[in-house]
Length: 603
Image (cartoon, rainbow, N blue to C red):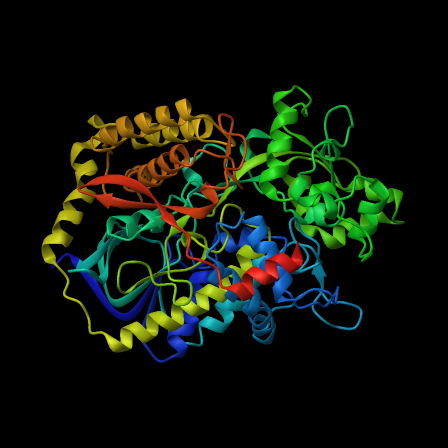
């Protein structure tokens, strides 16, 4: 096609965050021709926003830690809906991936004897997060990019993928466009690794940037891949709530890991009021014991602020709804209180949490070394995504792999903080390795020009309608409002069914979306292109959440407030069926006895 650029690769990686770069490094290093597509600029990845650290059981701070404890913590946090094979591989391989990153130049914080320092984090039994102050993700991306540029990969920046091109039942490439000039592109590929991240832009309040519009999940779904457990959306307990221009921006869990406490407007430390039975033997209701735990006392139990994210988010939500919140609709997160225990606490806080200090100073005019922060829950992460094989990371579509947040399985019903960064490295490497192997064993699939032409016509339709069409920004705004309101932290069947109806109406409006101008630097056109993906993942989230009639992990249903043992046996699978979306229960494969024994021992 004369007006469509064409590139050809063995392995094409869509997404250039931690998972995408690690996959590309592995593929390129194995000798296959590798291309990388990023929706924004190289280096502007959500991995950069992961501040607290990467979880790896290296036992540098507490020698009781090992992969078995990490595996057990991950399964418990995921309420045992996890892909147990992925949880096992992650726990076993994360230490090697951390040391590998160090060998490639990552500058971790250090213990007094020179090893990688590790900190406490919610849901982890021992100090396990290797970190670089509160800028760990930034250091990870810097290191991966610096290492990756020597592997010989091509990078296509500021490009949006519109569809996966298929040859029968397997992948043949991808079709999309360059965002700056609107020119269409075909990327031929023998294998594709999806590493596009999450879906946060389907919600009004989110820590996610504009790129997170559910592209990978939707592209894979339309190509015929299964999605899994899409109901499990994690609302991070602590995002900024003031001023309005920064609402939702992440406040790292590292603040609580360094001793930060949560209080309501009355100064009451409300997390003491609600400690789940599952964690009572590991959690202290004593201020002094909690502080000793933060400082590394092996005999102390954790403070309740370091419980799992879903629980902390619901507790904050409860305080706000009861009228005990902060002036701007959140609660208070106080790290300054540690001056009670630490001399020169201001210097300590600035050293341990430099990004948080500058973030609040510059954006909110607050000095966190002297006064508390206002925080509230923000849409942060999705545990569900593309269903993959635990070992190879290949989806149910031959040649289509996935790694990182876009892939389901590792985290089950709820992700533990810090597991995301090690997830990127462990499964990014595996996806790149197996994608390269697939590419070596399989030839290039044929690109269907009819499919390309159909996608091209669909992409141009909003420009042809012009300003007389539906406003894509208005459609996206209504979707975000309704998803936040109807499928948020606390859910009920009637509201979620309403959300499904809203999505249906918005789909019809999206088909009539129109934008003025040309394809060059046209933000309205970009927004119109994102709508199909946002609407697909929103429908999947709502349909799965309705079907799962229980509260588990990140899903809390007001009409089914308890966990149902029967539901612990199933993942929910979303797939296309005759053009419509179907959701069905799939039994979780039985866990090997040796892994069952580990979980029993750790209880």
